[in-house]
Amino acid sequence: MELFFQQLPIVLGALNVGFLQTLKLFLVTLLGAFPLGLLIAFGSMSRIKVISLTTKFFIWVIRGTPLMIQLLIVYYFPGLVLHNPIWGGGESGRFLAAAFAFVINYACYFSEIFRGGIQSVPIGQQEAGLVLGMTKRQIFIHVTLLQMIKRIVPPISNEIITLVKDTALARIIALQEIIWAGQAFMKGSHGISGAIWPLFFTAFYYLIFNGLVTLALAALEKKMDYFK
Image 1 (cartoon, rainbow, N blue to C red):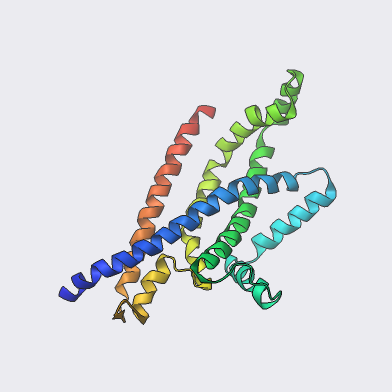
Image 2: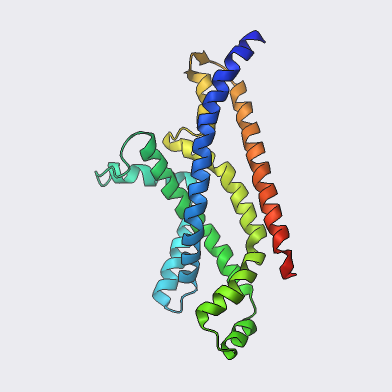
C-alpha cells in the first residue's frame, strides 16, 4: 500500500498529460468535423449527379472501413508509398495525422445525420418561405437549420459520446493519449513496471469525461425543447 501511494502522483501526472492529448484530439475533431460534415451533406444532396455520387461513394468508403485502418493509412501511406512523410516526426506529427483521420471519419458520420435532419423538415415550409419572399439562404438559416438542429441532437450526441472513446484508437500510431500513458506503466515507464492498476484509472477518466459530455448534451437537448 505504501508503494501504491508513492507511485500514485507519478501515475496521475502521466495520465493527466495523456488526458490532455485525448481532450485536444476530441475538441479538434468536433471543430473540424461539424462544418466539414455539413459541407459533405450538401454534396450528397447536390442535384449534380457527379458531385452527389462521388460524395456518397466517399461516405460509403469511410463509413465502411475501420477507423483504425484509416489512421494507419493516413499516417504511414505518405512516407512508405509516396516517400513524402508529410506529417513529420514526433508527437506533433502523429497528432496531426490522427486529427486529420478523425475529422474525415466523423465528418462523414455527421454528414448523414445532417442530411437526415435537413430532409426531415417538411418541404412545405420552404415553399412558404419562398412565397414570403425569402431567399433560399434565408430559408435555410431561419427555417431549416434551427429545426434540423432540434432533430439531430440525439443522434449527434451518440456520435460525440462514441468519439470520446474512439480517441483511444489513436494509440495505434503511437500517439501518447491516456491509454498509452496508462499501459506504459506495464512496460517500465517512470521506473514503474508490471503495474496494471493505472489502466483502471484511465477508465475513471473516461467515465468522468463521458459523464460531463452527457450532461452538457442533455442540457442542450433540453434547451431545444422550444421546438416541440
